[in-house]
Amino acid sequence: MAKIQYIGKKKQKEDNVAGTGTVWNGPGDVQEVNAPLEVIEKIIAHKGVWLLVPDDTKVAAPCTVKPTQAPKGKFEDEEVEAPPVVDFNRMGKDKIDDYCRVHLKVKIDQRHDLPKIRAKAWEAYAKHMTGVMTAGLRK
Image (cartoon, rainbow, N blue to C red; front, side, top):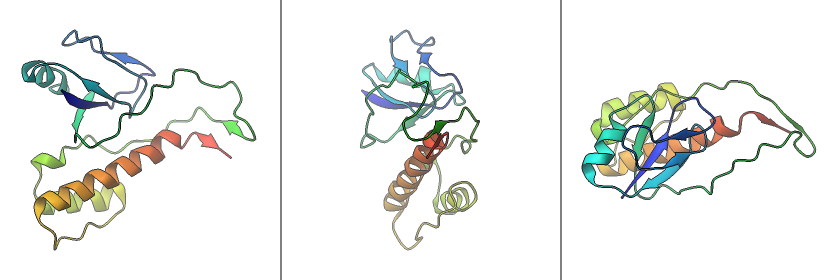
């Protein structure tokens, strides 16, 4: 089993590569895919569509209903640019630091060991993506 994040642009995306029947509800959605490693590799080979995320990433309950009017505010259909696709598990300290500074606007303490730096980078990435996903909701 693996956790895979949809990073494409569609409001809903079904696995049309490996036939697992998994459905993602928009960019940033993370779903657990219960399949053999070969199937997971087939899915994440499409780097502009899916991204393998750490096992400790929380899977959100799917939300398929979009309100026509948000309470006490307005729902904007505006495009918010997400950072480029990344896999911190394949990066060294310097590349992680560069990516986090440029795309996430955070500095990761380089005195930690590589696994801790990767964990901090994934945490910053998840926090940033949450902001990207909710940027259209105005109060």
